Length: 150
Length: 451
Image (cartoon, rainbow over all chains, first blue to last red; front, side):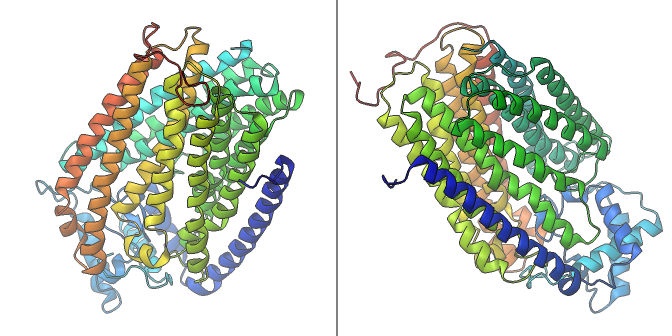
């Protein structure tokens, strides 16, 4: 440590510097918010159904097995790009049917394989959840994940 | 114990340790599912174990911070706690809220956002309890002596409460949701909690080494300054892939690299003060924790964080077992060890018995810390294999997981050892109060007074 540094100087640097970096961080966050709403996410596509789908996602706590955009538990596959993995960009109807059928088939009951619990979604909840996953896939996430495997 | 109201800390420590034990139980259950996927699949799904494991961690650390603050504040402020009654009430409220959340999770009652799963009314109770705590401790501080230790500590606690308010904001745009979610999750653990950590560590070092307060407090300001200068913009390393602008990649990479520095400074600080110190403090176990905490935090938070914090590396490793490895050692080193250290230091005074069961405490230290390191290594290996197979070769997630079974089995073994260490430690804290000192006495051997 620099011997010339006094305690009060160190204290002032701490308070002043922290305030400076906080304000800078807050300003960048504000810009990021603006950027997300206007550029990187599909504002028109954020329908009532997508919003409802996010609620279904939260109500069933999917996040504590799966990850979405790389965050969550790491026990089950990434779902931020599950729409891509099911070929949603080429054939949306097939992807939609495929994802729904997969969820309805749970638990698979295969010995030695991680079990996803059964979820008794109404058709409306199921479609909303898939709308949410489709919308999430459309977020401009700087090209992440690197492969469709998630 | 110079002040009567310091004993307010004892029930906080007891509740914290009970929840710590429960956290380990849920961790063991979850680790068992990784090794035997059908384990309890119908009784308790994995997500319930996981939410219990992570939420218990947060709740017990917060209760632990509160206990540490109540213990330290009278000595630092030279003033009795403003109101012990408020302290007991807010503990009861917080413990009730935590327990209600935990029971609720078993029945699927939650808000479903990672770490912020508590239902709305429980979030409100936690806020009320925390404000009571802040009122009580701030009043004590206001009436008494203001040192750098208690000022930085209270600043950290107040800011933790302020950032917690973002837990109430849940926008329907997932990207925006994540943007502010990190205002709680990152700004807590890589920001303001570090103020709490550094000030508690500074307190332990003043008490145990006898180094001049002026020297330690100057260091404290330098360290917490480095923490916030790097940690605030370091949030950027969470903004790479969530739909935020591309400028977060250079900003996040640079500032999260700098986040290693305050942790390294804390290691140098602790060891330097230890060697410089002239006081022979009899509580050798507490000294062990005070030196171990910054060391493991440096590796867990610093080195393991740095390993995958650069954006072009994180692009491949983000959200793999590498993250899990880093998370486990970082939390353990920085916050778990810190609170265990303060408890080790405070318990002899709180129970009015000179350092007791120190040998058992130190066995607990080495077994638990060794096991946490081993757990981190196995998860790191798992993460590296996973990153390569899944992110580079593009193999399917579940196929990759099938390749990792051996690592998960070893992680479970490490978890069992952590549990054994924790049992020893809890027994050393709360078991029969008998004096037990290490062979060769309890005198610290560093410093000019070495015999």
